[in-house]
Image (cartoon, rainbow over all chains, first blue to last red; front, side, top):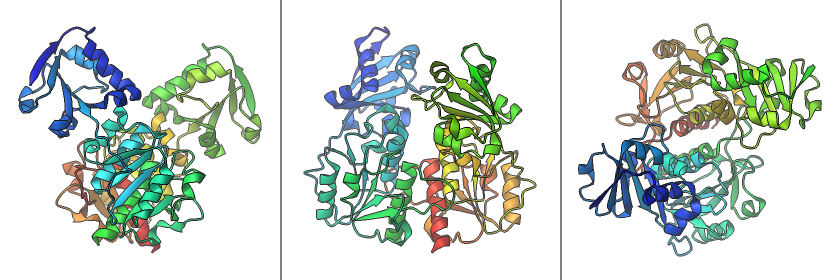
Length: 259
Length: 259
């Protein structure tokens, strides 16, 4: 490992970190993103760590096996790049894993989540985390969704981003056709006129489509699904949070599969 | 209704609104809180609306039956008090519903959620919304939890706050004893050494305890529960988001009850 101390707030690498935090375009041009927090940094596969950024109090011994560059910042400088209220002093620039959905071999008995235009970073991160928890085979999302490497998404995945296969696709309807031609049944989460969630069988290959927080699934996409499915709402709420809907659907599939 | 136009940014009522948004203490002293958004304001029970705050473009006809004071603000002034990026021009000061758990008659076949020291406003709001969706009989939470009238909680409930019975209690263990003495079985969501969630029967009176996001349920509280329950995690994630855990538990109870 090569260690470099940074003590000036005009340092170019500090500006680079801030740019990566702020700009999705910049992250994707360079194929890297920012991870913050001791646990989150340590959970990254060593091979995927591009640069480590530590504050002067951080425990260097933890990184003896890392071959990347390590930047050591004064506490004040670390605080100036941190997005956390109480920075732990551990940050990494990590390499993106770019997964091509078109060329991907699919699991006919798999469990997939398809996301259309999800806007809220917290929802996106929570759905990546739950896909990790249920060992889903992948998340397919369109370009209109929030960038999965947005710092707030990364934070709310709590380390799951490095473990879940995420596929950004140009055309969700094509992706759905690919799932279907691999015998995976595609269910669209819908609010009315749908089959009740609890009467469906999810023990074979299953994909759930979750739509945008405000508008749901678009007409174009809903036309392609095999079945519309509704999570029963017994009380006064008009709808469920997108991440809650995804979690209830995925865990019902888990229940049917492990029982 | 009495209408008052506000055009000066030094107006006392504007300061009052900002204070209510910022300070939990102030909200509880006056027993009111701030609701923002057209739909959210219209979903409030008319009787619970203390003051309406509208921008000059808002549709006054919607509020013909309201007897409270209506403040009409210029667009710029409304923007200055709004917490939304793109304000819709509708806000209300709403009266809190104060529910006493100690004197409350419980439903022996009911469904309850018990929250210990939940910190994230988004999680709290999402749990209130899902309790509305499953028609839960109540949420019991301790004083160390985030204020349910925090603007971010109110926003993420999407109108459910006015429909779900929420009880703040001094002592969660006493509340759990009260549930138990009403034949309600209390399950603590726990990560290890627990019975698997899917093998339990939730068709009788059931309460789920969800702990703090970082630390889980405290030793003191976990000692009181009838059973620890774990939601199976098949993949690499170490835990689930608190609101996701609550939702998966509550919807499994719903599944068992409606099937």
